[in-house]
Length: 75
Image (cartoon, rainbow, N blue to C red; front, side, top):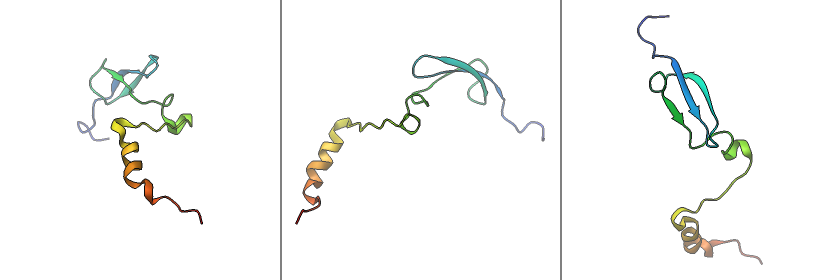
């Protein structure tokens, strides 16, 4: 490997959404830093299989109001 071109690889603490933590090696930040996760395998729908529609600011309701008339017609 070439010298001087690789990032520093050091130990950091990762804190999951439920408060559990573990140490791993990473190029994130500097040695001894803490990485707090907002989404992790315990909460992400891709791993849990639980999908929720989050309607922030009424976006889903706004969409339904605007395009609700374009639904399928039953003959």
